[in-house]
Amino acid sequence: MVSTYDPFRVEQPETTFKRLKELRAEGPVVSIGEGMYYVTSFEEARKVLRDVEHFSSAEGFRAPGVTVPVEDRMLGEQDAPQHPEVRRIVMSAFNPAAIRLEEEFVRQRAHALLEALDVPGTVDLVPAFTTQLPNDATVHLLGFPMEDAPRIAAWSKEVMESEWPAMNRTERGEGLEGAFPEYTAYVDAFVASLRDAVAAGHPLEGLLTRLLTADVGGEQLSVRQMRALVFNLLLGGLTTTAQLLGNVIFQLLISDSVPQLADADAAERSAFIEECLRVYPPVMLIPRGCVRETTVAGITVKPGERVIVGSACVNRDESLFDSSEQFDAGRENVDRHLTFGFGPHICAGAAMARSVASIGLDEFLRFANVRRASLPVGFVYENVPTFFEYGPTALPVVFGDSA
Image (cartoon, rainbow, N blue to C red; front, side, top):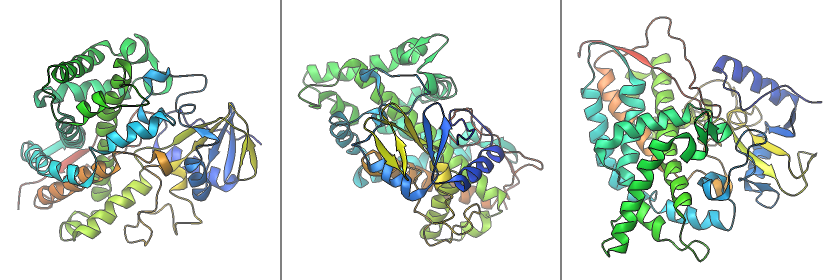
């Protein structure tokens, strides 16, 4: 039996989560047509994500029929032997010590953004806070000029809301260079300046310089490979964390939890963020391409076919989570979700995303609690127009006078 569901189509939450619940009822793995299988079971999802013998990350992420050239693949689209070597370098920027060094900047920036809001009144927090804070944090971490942060954010938004994530092209052209020539030229020029500094014997400290000079399979990364990784870091750091922070604030306000969480300790706030990651995953799915015949939950999957791990679906697996459709930050297994993936491809920036979201939550609670923040009457959540993401396109918040 083939079920009707297109994971590459942007839908709104009331449609998406209802359909995912129906898919879970059909079985742990469901055929959805066009040589694709959708994994609805938490345990089967973990098996697929750690199976690098039968499944490729490079063969699954884009829409059916779309293949990205090897040099243009982002970290999540790479396989061994390149992936573990590049990932090791990227992870050096996201170790606990490196993240702690960023915390002061992120907190100061969060405080400044909130204090700059035009209140009392209604403010859309998506452009004013939930997008800007993660973007500024990413720009700072990677060493780009902070004065360029606004245009980097605008470019990144254009990329993620285009057809490029699914099709690797737009009407302007194919690949990053063809589809977004201005953004590509900017990134290439910045990387070239780092390369020149290395050649002159005065390398600048930072992740991008380490990537430039790294030995990956006996060679250094090419211009196109560096471009893809820099875009990966910019887009991932901005969009995933922006959706997470937007969802956190949405849940705070829709549940009237600001006063309660304002008095909560760090562990309770952390649990709140984890439950937001489970119920409102900023990344909805993790595709894989089959390269060797295998079975998933008793269903044969052949080379060339694809398996879509529905993180938004398995995070609500009724066999693992009681009242799985309900938000409950007090559940014991609140952090046992697959929003950041699992296995060798677990998200490299997960700790940074959590850190930015945590600081953003802290500062928002401080600001909002004394200003009686609320959602406007009749507010309707509208999802971002990117097929694999879940986050609000707008988040108008009504602020009163400070108490």
